[in-house]
Image 1 (spheres, rainbow, N blue to C red):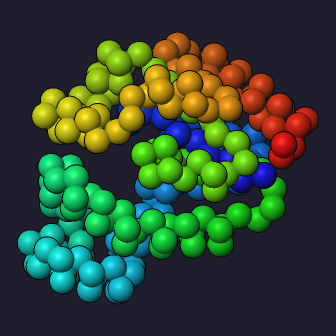
Image 2: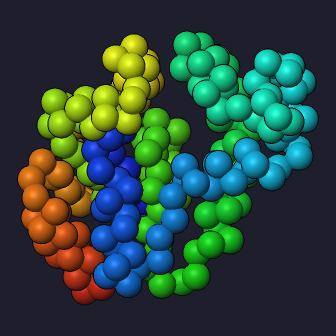
Amino acid sequence: MLIALTGGIGAGKSTVLDIFQSLGAHVADTDLIVHKIYEENQQLYASLKERWGNKVFQDGKPHRPSIAEIVFQNKQELEWLNSVMHPLVKLQIQAQHNGQISIIAVPLLYEVNWQSEFEKVISVWCDSKFQNDRLLSRAWSQKEINSRLSAQMHQSEKLQRADYGIINNWSLDFLKNQCGRIFELLHDKGPS
């Protein structure tokens, strides 16, 4: 089964992904896939340079903070970047899927309309105060947080649309229990 893991930024998707991996799932994170593409894909380099020139490069490589500054302030530029990146990311996801339960973190699953690419969706949700505090602890400014949040679907809507929901407001043990139960259900039901 190919499962998508989504949720709001700062909701705890990385922690949840680590838990699923410890339970035996094959896991991948589209953020890491994107990072690798930024590091290695010469076709992407050419497209970025043609679109934005050298201002989005540092030491010969794409500079993600400079790109983020452009795309999170201009919806058309974000759509263009997505049109370039998404096919590359999808190819990597398919290449990594090995037939067992594979859980792929896709933060913007619903925003980019990828839910039909997966057999099930799990969404991670946390209280907005926890979310904001987690992002501030990453040394993000409130302006950066607000910019990213405004570019995403509200995490409550993601939770409502998902097949399974995880609430990440409490202890790590509680989080592990939720992940364990969902992993059991995925094994029991299989694709449906």
